Length: 160
Image 1: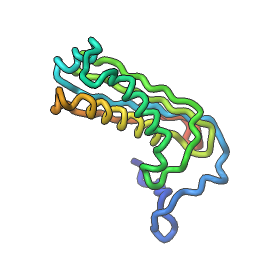
Image 2: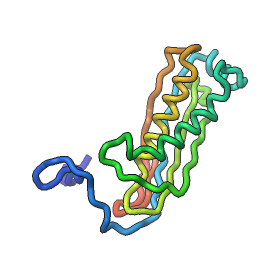
Image 3: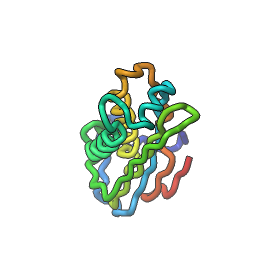
Image 4: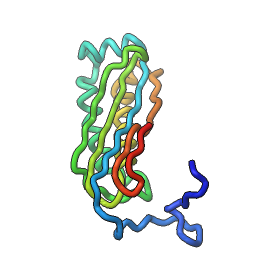
């Protein structure tokens, strides 16, 4: 982190406030976040065979991720409500873990970015997978939730 940057969620008195984005131009913005869940090989194989006790865990996790992105402003206190123009949720097997990797890409045209929406979507999608599979594998581990890419706005493009 650069020490010369101001913390925008603090006003001149040092009090927390919601940043006013009303004078910012609306630009296309995109964010990609990723995370993973590691599990026993047996649990991983159940998912691949479509034989999990609670049904299609991948479909439910995708829906949960989408819902979470749309409600990020209700969960993270200083986030603005954002009109998402598009969102992709992709869940892929990760043999080497064994486990799953969840990727989320959020898009909008507006005065503020969608990084938090992508990160919250990944987090809730992974938590949903844990919830639906914990009966067969309570030792699963969620990890590596991170922003991979963001673009748009005054800071331009950033890539991990």
